[in-house]
Image (tube, rainbow, N blue to C red; front, side):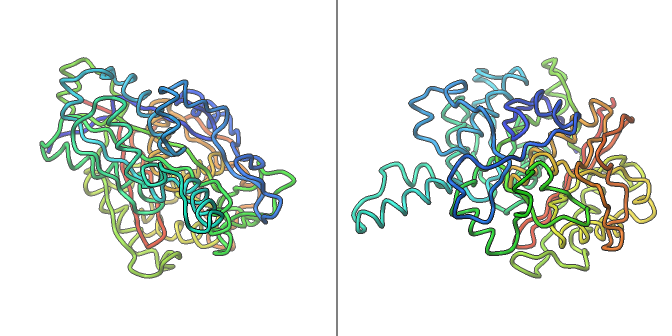
Length: 415
């Protein structure tokens, strides 16, 4: 089976507009959650979110092109440009002509949907902005990446809710293993911080809302005082490459993408199955695909949304998949710092797991002040301060509405 490695990364996140700044903020335990500025929250219960900050699209693309894109597409194009440059293949027509794109997008241009519907009703059903459809549909991010950078392989968009980014990376892994491609661009993008989206999640009782006086405390996975997830946004893009192809061109190699596993609960539209069977099976499938055992994995980047159902349910999944090895596993939820970036979250967290391996550092779960042991959250979630330790193998897991479970395993590269 052909080995697949990661040779480039780019990111726009609530913690920084590149990989370096994002990782430094994670290591320092900084929080990207603050009072929302994308829209007026006066009439809303939820006042805060994890927004991308100080992002100027014209720093990454022509301003005329940027005006034709929704925010999620702008973030994706910016992250893709950084990843291609990092991998040393930006502008390499010989490679990019055959490079596929696999991008996870859970929702798409929701701020465009909201604005267009308002204009539609105010005009008494006579007008909508002319770029409505080209901006809002989820596949437009991949399309814009292809147009901006001259990429001509297939451009596929994966929509599996919060597992979208992870599943896109898994699909790209299979593309390279099969021999259909030597290089793939894979990741996720999302930006749904607007009134329509926030209210839609709020009526499901999914969002945190009681920390308006100190939003940095809002996302507290595995803590007794957690009260829901906090909306985030952003994009992360990974350049995946067949190992021998990467070595032949002298590419920098960050880590090996060793395995992927996916399952579906078939249980509920929004809630995970409390028995954790299918989530744990996705973990087991990923380990089998990677050729590793539970005791081989030192770090687990949790989905860790800060909701009561997810955090206790995910702990159950970990125990089922890892058995006795769960007691020695170092776990953290980086969503405590980035918020929940929906379709982008799996890509962002896979990137952070790669950096954890490279930097021998387990990120913290911040705001974990009163661990909910009585509620079943009784493992080591690396509370409040990260730790330095060797990491040879890491797992990153995501679970989405509709019962989607996606898991990747990453390893330190050894010849």
